[in-house]
Length: 299
Ligand SMILES: Cc1cc2nc3c(=O)[nH]c(=O)nc-3n(C[C@H](O)[C@H](O)[C@H](O)COP(=O)(O)OP(=O)(O)OC[C@H]3O[C@@H](n4cnc5c(N)ncnc54)[C@H](O)[C@@H]3O)c2cc1C
Image (cartoon, rainbow, N blue to C red; front, top):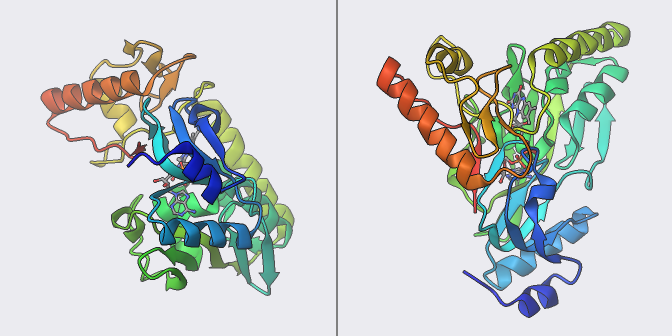
């Protein structure tokens, strides 16, 4: 649905119109949002969501933009970005509440500083709390599901916020119930951690970080493009098929890590999608394995 720019501006006065979304994605790819809103308070986002609901305006949510491929045609209607704003974290004993916009590496550091163990894995995940709940993000043998208690979710069909438990969220491998509920928005999440030694936790984080630096390409990407489908990692399957270095336009299967498709600058979503399809076809034809994208395609 294409709404008039004046209508969107009138409903959401602080939104930017026709805003290129490649500025907000890790892959540096993405056409324009009709309107992009970056709320700075919980009240502002709740009001925007209610207004959108009342006027039937479809809403797309972006967190850190680290696991999305936004089509070159961009995103219609309203896009709300919840990263870098809405960044409060509150601690009570072993529990904490984090706003949806808190970045996971920041949360890893904060919890380690408080002597709380369990979120060190989050240091390797560059997205937001909201995106991590949506994706059940994980690394180094752990995942969000292990430490998450609940998430407050705005449900447009009810026009209100509900607290969903870990179980209600249906968290699985890079999956949550939110994948089947477009328009549901995570506003904040609650975690319970274990007591730990702050210095040891920080050392663990440093160790995770240095592992990452050594094994990751140094160019814009969405991290792992494909989900794990067998005991073998997608990166190894792609490498076995001799696809490292395969290129469509400015997008290349990284020679450093084959599950990363890197952007050499100015790459388009069309080229990224073509390369994704090429890799899937080659891996299926040669090894009989069907790779499913982990990256979420928006627009
Ligand atoms: C270099 C690199 C390394 C990575 N390493 C890992 C890793 O080790 N493990 C891992 O799991 N992932 C990894 N990722 C992928 C990514 O960081 C995670 O999937 C992350 O959880 C996505 O969060 P985000 O805030 O960036 O979400 P986005 O990319 O902005 O959005 C992803 C999806 O979540 C939805 N979403 C975002 N916020 C909300 C919200 N508040 N409410 C409802 N829906 C929302 C979006 O609509 C979209 O469908 C990596 C990415 C990069 C670029």
